[in-house]
Amino acid sequence: MTKLSVPAGDTATAAPTAPTAPTSPSAPTAPGGRTAGALRPARSAPRRGRGSGPRSRAGWTPWLYLAPALVVLAALLVYPVYQLGLISFLQYTQAQVSGGQPTTFQGFGNYATLFSDGQFWTVLLTTLLFAAACVLGTLAVGCALAVLLTRVRALPRLVLMLAALGAWATPAITGSTVWLFLFDPDFGPVNKLLGLGDFSWTYGRYSAFALVLSEVVWCSFPFVMVTVYAGIKAIPEEVLEAAELDGASRWTIWRSVMAPMLRPILVVVTIQSIIWDFKVFTQIYVITNGGGIAGQNMVLNVYAYQKAFASSQYSLGSAVGIVMLLILLTASLGYLRLLRRQGEQL
Image (cartoon, rainbow, N blue to C red; front, side):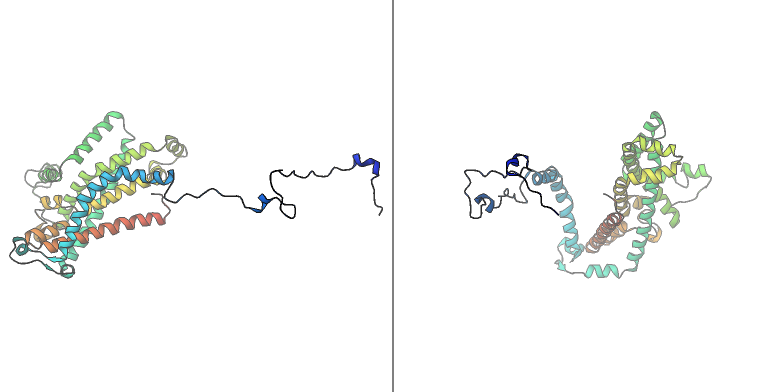
Protein backbone atom coordinates (compact mmCIF):
# COMPACT_ATOMS: atom_id res chain seq x y z
CA MET A 1 0.00 0.00 0.00
CA THR A 2 1.52 3.34 -1.06
CA LYS A 3 1.44 6.36 1.16
CA LEU A 4 -0.02 9.48 -0.40
CA SER A 5 1.74 12.74 0.27
CA VAL A 6 0.73 16.30 -0.41
CA PRO A 7 3.30 18.52 -2.11
CA ALA A 8 4.49 21.53 -0.21
CA GLY A 9 3.15 23.92 -2.80
CA ASP A 10 -0.33 22.44 -2.74
CA THR A 11 -1.20 23.26 0.87
CA ALA A 12 -4.23 25.24 -0.28
CA THR A 13 -5.81 22.09 -1.64
CA ALA A 14 -5.33 20.11 1.53
CA ALA A 15 -8.30 19.31 3.70
CA PRO A 16 -8.88 22.16 6.12
CA THR A 17 -8.54 21.37 9.77
CA ALA A 18 -11.27 22.09 12.27
CA PRO A 19 -10.90 25.55 13.73
CA THR A 20 -10.17 25.77 17.38
CA ALA A 21 -12.47 27.73 19.62
CA PRO A 22 -10.95 31.05 20.54
CA THR A 23 -10.36 31.63 24.17
CA SER A 24 -11.60 34.75 25.84
CA PRO A 25 -8.78 37.19 26.37
CA SER A 26 -10.20 38.07 29.79
CA ALA A 27 -10.32 34.50 31.03
CA PRO A 28 -7.08 33.44 32.72
CA THR A 29 -5.44 30.30 31.45
CA ALA A 30 -4.83 27.50 33.88
CA PRO A 31 -2.00 24.98 33.55
CA GLY A 32 -2.70 22.46 30.82
CA GLY A 33 -4.31 25.00 28.50
CA ARG A 34 -7.73 25.07 30.16
CA THR A 35 -9.38 28.23 31.24
CA ALA A 36 -10.01 28.85 34.89
CA GLY A 37 -13.71 29.13 34.25
CA ALA A 38 -13.79 25.51 33.10
CA LEU A 39 -12.49 24.38 36.47
CA ARG A 40 -15.46 25.84 38.33
CA PRO A 41 -18.90 24.19 37.92
CA ALA A 42 -21.75 26.39 36.82
CA ARG A 43 -23.74 27.84 39.67
CA SER A 44 -27.32 26.61 39.89
CA ALA A 45 -30.23 28.84 40.72
CA PRO A 46 -31.05 28.98 44.42
CA ARG A 47 -33.76 26.53 45.40
CA ARG A 48 -36.92 27.79 46.92
CA GLY A 49 -38.36 26.27 50.02
CA ARG A 50 -41.24 23.82 49.75
CA GLY A 51 -43.61 26.21 51.42
CA SER A 52 -42.85 29.17 49.16
CA GLY A 53 -43.86 29.98 45.65
CA PRO A 54 -47.16 30.71 43.90
CA ARG A 55 -48.11 27.05 43.65
CA SER A 56 -48.03 26.50 47.40
CA ARG A 57 -49.92 29.75 47.98
CA ALA A 58 -52.56 28.65 45.47
CA GLY A 59 -52.93 25.39 47.40
CA TRP A 60 -54.03 27.31 50.50
CA THR A 61 -56.54 29.49 48.66
CA PRO A 62 -59.46 26.99 48.71
CA TRP A 63 -59.00 26.44 52.45
CA LEU A 64 -59.24 30.19 53.04
CA TYR A 65 -62.59 30.24 51.28
CA LEU A 66 -63.75 27.18 53.25
CA ALA A 67 -62.56 28.53 56.60
CA PRO A 68 -65.87 30.23 57.63
CA ALA A 69 -67.89 27.10 56.83
CA LEU A 70 -65.36 24.92 58.66
CA VAL A 71 -65.62 27.12 61.75
CA VAL A 72 -69.41 26.84 61.72
CA LEU A 73 -69.25 23.06 61.24
CA ALA A 74 -66.77 22.75 64.09
CA ALA A 75 -69.09 24.69 66.38
CA LEU A 76 -72.20 22.75 65.34
CA LEU A 77 -70.74 19.24 64.98
CA VAL A 78 -67.39 18.78 66.70
CA TYR A 79 -68.40 20.11 70.11
CA PRO A 80 -71.70 18.16 70.32
CA VAL A 81 -69.92 14.97 69.27
CA TYR A 82 -67.32 15.61 71.96
CA GLN A 83 -70.03 16.07 74.58
CA LEU A 84 -71.82 12.94 73.35
CA GLY A 85 -68.65 10.89 73.66
CA LEU A 86 -67.90 12.32 77.09
CA ILE A 87 -71.36 11.47 78.47
CA SER A 88 -71.06 7.94 77.10
CA PHE A 89 -68.14 7.33 79.49
CA LEU A 90 -69.96 8.70 82.54
CA GLN A 91 -72.77 7.57 84.79
CA TYR A 92 -75.30 10.16 83.74
CA THR A 93 -78.91 9.54 84.67
CA GLN A 94 -81.74 11.69 86.02
CA ALA A 95 -80.11 11.62 89.44
CA GLN A 96 -76.96 13.24 88.08
CA VAL A 97 -78.94 15.74 85.99
CA SER A 98 -80.93 16.93 89.03
CA GLY A 99 -77.78 17.07 91.17
CA GLY A 100 -78.89 14.41 93.62
CA GLN A 101 -75.86 12.22 92.94
CA PRO A 102 -72.36 13.04 91.71
CA THR A 103 -71.28 12.13 88.19
CA THR A 104 -68.83 9.20 88.13
CA PHE A 105 -66.55 7.92 85.41
CA GLN A 106 -67.62 4.51 84.06
CA GLY A 107 -65.06 3.96 81.31
CA PHE A 108 -66.39 1.41 78.85
CA GLY A 109 -69.00 0.18 81.33
CA ASN A 110 -71.88 1.74 79.41
CA TYR A 111 -70.69 0.09 76.21
CA ALA A 112 -70.39 -3.27 77.98
CA THR A 113 -73.97 -2.89 79.23
CA LEU A 114 -75.13 -1.94 75.77
CA PHE A 115 -73.40 -4.82 73.98
CA SER A 116 -74.73 -7.33 76.52
CA ASP A 117 -78.31 -6.31 75.73
CA GLY A 118 -79.84 -8.70 73.24
CA GLN A 119 -82.38 -6.11 72.11
CA PHE A 120 -79.56 -3.85 70.93
CA TRP A 121 -78.26 -6.45 68.46
CA THR A 122 -81.78 -7.17 67.19
CA VAL A 123 -82.42 -3.46 66.65
CA LEU A 124 -79.00 -3.04 65.00
CA LEU A 125 -79.69 -5.79 62.46
CA THR A 126 -83.15 -4.40 61.78
CA THR A 127 -81.69 -0.91 61.25
CA LEU A 128 -79.06 -2.17 58.79
CA LEU A 129 -81.61 -4.07 56.70
CA PHE A 130 -84.14 -1.25 56.76
CA ALA A 131 -81.52 1.38 55.83
CA ALA A 132 -80.24 -0.77 52.96
CA ALA A 133 -83.78 -1.14 51.58
CA CYS A 134 -84.35 2.62 51.87
CA VAL A 135 -81.07 3.44 50.11
CA LEU A 136 -81.75 1.05 47.24
CA GLY A 137 -85.31 2.28 46.85
CA THR A 138 -84.29 5.93 46.93
CA LEU A 139 -81.52 5.45 44.37
CA ALA A 140 -83.74 3.38 42.06
CA VAL A 141 -86.64 5.85 42.08
CA GLY A 142 -84.40 8.93 41.91
CA CYS A 143 -82.28 7.65 39.01
CA ALA A 144 -85.31 6.39 37.07
CA LEU A 145 -87.09 9.75 37.36
CA ALA A 146 -83.88 11.60 36.47
CA VAL A 147 -83.69 9.65 33.22
CA LEU A 148 -87.40 10.29 32.67
CA LEU A 149 -86.83 14.04 32.99
CA THR A 150 -84.48 13.89 30.02
CA ARG A 151 -87.15 12.15 27.89
CA VAL A 152 -90.22 14.33 28.49
CA ARG A 153 -91.08 17.78 27.24
CA ALA A 154 -90.62 21.04 29.12
CA LEU A 155 -94.09 21.29 30.72
CA PRO A 156 -94.25 17.73 32.16
CA ARG A 157 -90.65 18.16 33.29
CA LEU A 158 -91.54 21.34 35.15
CA VAL A 159 -94.57 19.72 36.82
CA LEU A 160 -92.53 16.71 37.93
CA MET A 161 -89.73 18.91 39.25
CA LEU A 162 -92.15 21.08 41.25
CA ALA A 163 -93.91 18.02 42.69
CA ALA A 164 -90.60 16.43 43.67
CA LEU A 165 -89.28 19.62 45.25
CA GLY A 166 -92.55 19.95 47.16
CA ALA A 167 -92.08 16.47 48.60
CA TRP A 168 -88.46 17.30 49.45
CA ALA A 169 -89.40 20.55 51.20
CA THR A 170 -92.15 18.95 53.30
CA PRO A 171 -91.06 18.51 56.96
CA ALA A 172 -90.67 14.91 58.04
CA ILE A 173 -93.32 15.08 60.75
CA THR A 174 -95.83 16.67 58.35
CA GLY A 175 -95.15 14.09 55.64
CA SER A 176 -95.47 11.25 58.15
CA THR A 177 -98.81 12.57 59.41
CA VAL A 178 -100.14 12.89 55.85
CA TRP A 179 -98.89 9.37 55.10
CA LEU A 180 -100.77 8.04 58.12
CA PHE A 181 -103.98 9.64 56.86
CA LEU A 182 -103.51 8.24 53.35
CA PHE A 183 -103.12 4.69 54.70
CA ASP A 184 -105.63 4.99 57.53
CA PRO A 185 -107.75 1.80 57.81
CA ASP A 186 -111.02 3.76 58.30
CA PHE A 187 -110.71 6.98 56.29
CA GLY A 188 -107.61 6.48 54.12
CA PRO A 189 -108.12 6.69 50.35
CA VAL A 190 -105.42 4.08 49.65
CA ASN A 191 -107.33 1.23 51.33
CA LYS A 192 -110.52 2.24 49.51
CA LEU A 193 -108.70 2.43 46.19
CA LEU A 194 -107.05 -0.98 46.68
CA GLY A 195 -110.14 -2.56 48.23
CA LEU A 196 -108.36 -3.53 51.46
CA GLY A 197 -111.20 -2.58 53.77
CA ASP A 198 -110.07 -1.91 57.33
CA PHE A 199 -106.58 -3.38 56.88
CA SER A 200 -104.16 -1.76 59.35
CA TRP A 201 -100.74 -1.09 57.85
CA THR A 202 -99.16 -0.30 61.19
CA TYR A 203 -100.27 -3.48 62.98
CA GLY A 204 -97.99 -5.97 61.28
CA ARG A 205 -94.23 -5.62 61.49
CA TYR A 206 -93.42 -5.90 57.79
CA SER A 207 -96.40 -3.88 56.60
CA ALA A 208 -95.43 -1.08 59.00
CA PHE A 209 -91.85 -1.15 57.74
CA ALA A 210 -93.13 -1.09 54.15
CA LEU A 211 -95.27 1.95 54.98
CA VAL A 212 -92.32 3.78 56.55
CA LEU A 213 -90.09 2.71 53.64
CA SER A 214 -92.45 4.23 51.10
CA GLU A 215 -92.59 7.50 53.06
CA VAL A 216 -88.81 7.68 53.41
CA VAL A 217 -88.32 7.06 49.69
CA TRP A 218 -91.00 9.66 48.88
CA CYS A 219 -89.25 12.40 50.84
CA SER A 220 -85.69 11.37 49.83
CA PHE A 221 -85.78 10.65 46.10
CA PRO A 222 -85.99 14.34 44.99
CA PHE A 223 -82.39 14.96 46.09
CA VAL A 224 -81.17 11.99 44.04
CA MET A 225 -83.36 12.91 41.08
CA VAL A 226 -82.23 16.54 40.85
CA THR A 227 -78.55 15.70 41.39
CA VAL A 228 -78.46 12.86 38.87
CA TYR A 229 -80.48 14.90 36.35
CA ALA A 230 -77.92 17.70 36.57
CA GLY A 231 -75.15 15.16 35.98
CA ILE A 232 -76.95 13.68 32.96
CA LYS A 233 -77.36 17.12 31.40
CA ALA A 234 -73.60 17.63 31.76
CA ILE A 235 -72.87 14.53 29.63
CA PRO A 236 -72.06 15.49 26.01
CA GLU A 237 -74.99 14.73 23.72
CA GLU A 238 -72.62 13.31 21.12
CA VAL A 239 -71.80 10.41 23.44
CA LEU A 240 -75.46 9.48 23.93
CA GLU A 241 -76.23 9.87 20.23
CA ALA A 242 -73.31 7.62 19.32
CA ALA A 243 -74.62 4.95 21.70
CA GLU A 244 -78.10 5.18 20.16
CA LEU A 245 -76.68 4.93 16.66
CA ASP A 246 -74.83 1.77 17.70
CA GLY A 247 -78.19 0.23 18.57
CA ALA A 248 -77.84 0.27 22.37
CA SER A 249 -81.05 0.10 24.37
CA ARG A 250 -81.93 2.65 27.03
CA TRP A 251 -80.95 0.27 29.81
CA THR A 252 -77.63 -0.45 28.08
CA ILE A 253 -76.98 3.27 27.62
CA TRP A 254 -77.64 3.87 31.31
CA ARG A 255 -75.58 0.91 32.51
CA SER A 256 -72.62 1.24 30.12
CA VAL A 257 -72.49 4.96 29.32
CA MET A 258 -74.31 7.13 31.86
CA ALA A 259 -73.58 5.27 35.08
CA PRO A 260 -69.76 5.19 34.62
CA MET A 261 -69.72 8.91 33.75
CA LEU A 262 -71.99 9.69 36.71
CA ARG A 263 -69.94 7.65 39.15
CA PRO A 264 -68.72 10.62 41.28
CA ILE A 265 -72.27 11.96 41.56
CA LEU A 266 -73.65 8.52 42.43
CA VAL A 267 -71.01 8.20 45.15
CA VAL A 268 -72.19 11.45 46.73
CA VAL A 269 -75.90 10.61 46.64
CA THR A 270 -75.25 7.07 47.91
CA ILE A 271 -73.26 8.25 50.92
CA GLN A 272 -75.85 10.93 51.66
CA SER A 273 -78.65 8.36 51.44
CA ILE A 274 -76.79 5.96 53.75
CA ILE A 275 -76.35 8.69 56.36
CA TRP A 276 -79.95 9.91 56.15
CA ASP A 277 -81.64 6.51 56.02
CA PHE A 278 -79.52 4.93 58.74
CA LYS A 279 -80.57 7.57 61.26
CA VAL A 280 -84.28 7.69 60.41
CA PHE A 281 -86.24 8.72 63.49
CA THR A 282 -89.25 10.93 62.78
CA GLN A 283 -90.93 8.67 60.23
CA ILE A 284 -90.60 5.56 62.42
CA TYR A 285 -91.65 7.35 65.59
CA VAL A 286 -94.72 9.04 64.09
CA ILE A 287 -96.01 6.25 61.84
CA THR A 288 -95.44 3.34 64.26
CA ASN A 289 -96.20 5.39 67.40
CA GLY A 290 -92.77 5.09 68.98
CA GLY A 291 -91.48 1.82 67.52
CA GLY A 292 -94.53 -0.34 66.89
CA ILE A 293 -96.23 -2.94 69.02
CA ALA A 294 -93.75 -4.25 71.62
CA GLY A 295 -90.95 -2.45 69.80
CA GLN A 296 -91.24 -4.58 66.66
CA ASN A 297 -90.44 -1.62 64.38
CA MET A 298 -87.72 -0.06 66.48
CA VAL A 299 -84.51 1.26 64.88
CA LEU A 300 -81.33 2.52 66.53
CA ASN A 301 -82.40 6.16 66.71
CA VAL A 302 -85.68 5.27 68.40
CA TYR A 303 -83.82 2.83 70.66
CA ALA A 304 -81.40 5.59 71.71
CA TYR A 305 -84.31 7.97 72.33
CA GLN A 306 -86.06 5.48 74.58
CA LYS A 307 -82.88 4.76 76.51
CA ALA A 308 -81.98 8.41 76.94
CA PHE A 309 -85.35 10.09 77.57
CA ALA A 310 -87.93 7.41 78.32
CA SER A 311 -85.62 5.56 80.75
CA SER A 312 -83.50 8.61 81.73
CA GLN A 313 -80.30 6.65 80.98
CA TYR A 314 -78.57 9.43 79.10
CA SER A 315 -75.20 7.70 79.15
CA LEU A 316 -76.59 4.61 77.39
CA GLY A 317 -78.35 6.80 74.83
CA SER A 318 -75.07 8.60 74.19
CA ALA A 319 -73.29 5.29 73.77
CA VAL A 320 -75.83 4.28 71.12
CA GLY A 321 -75.18 7.59 69.35
CA ILE A 322 -71.42 7.00 69.32
CA VAL A 323 -71.91 3.48 67.96
CA MET A 324 -74.10 4.88 65.15
CA LEU A 325 -71.47 7.50 64.35
CA LEU A 326 -68.73 4.87 64.11
CA ILE A 327 -70.89 2.65 61.90
CA LEU A 328 -71.62 5.52 59.51
CA LEU A 329 -67.96 6.53 59.32
CA THR A 330 -66.91 2.94 58.69
CA ALA A 331 -69.54 2.43 55.99
CA SER A 332 -68.73 5.70 54.19
CA LEU A 333 -64.95 5.28 54.30
CA GLY A 334 -65.21 1.61 53.33
CA TYR A 335 -67.38 2.48 50.33
CA LEU A 336 -64.91 5.14 49.18
CA ARG A 337 -61.98 2.78 49.65
CA LEU A 338 -63.72 0.08 47.62
CA LEU A 339 -64.24 2.50 44.76
CA ARG A 340 -60.60 3.62 44.89
CA ARG A 341 -59.46 0.00 44.68
CA GLN A 342 -61.53 -0.35 41.53
CA GLY A 343 -59.61 2.58 40.04
CA GLU A 344 -62.40 5.13 40.19
CA GLN A 345 -61.49 8.81 40.20
CA LEU A 346 -63.44 10.51 42.97
